[in-house]
Length: 82
Image 1: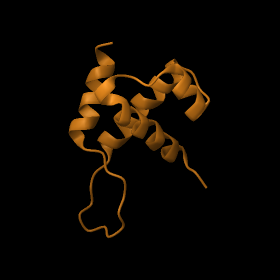
Image 2: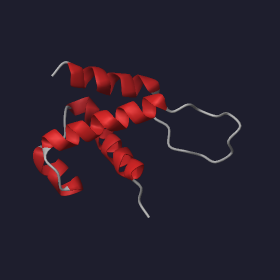
Image 3: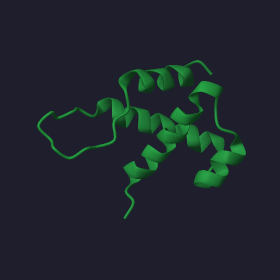
Image 4: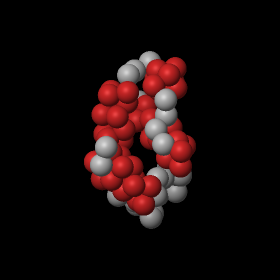
């Protein structure tokens, strides 16, 4: 079963994929998530905040998704300067 953070991870994945060339098109966002650009950007901000607040536990043996702090910072910075 998908959790809300899974959906945020998908939104973050799409943003990271598109970062080198700009934002995904409204059509791509709509086809991937069924939402508009404004909602996508709100959810992206939430995803960035969520992952920036996570702490890494070096004792955990379960692999989790990891987003480099530099990528998260770049996405947050890019959003602030639009």
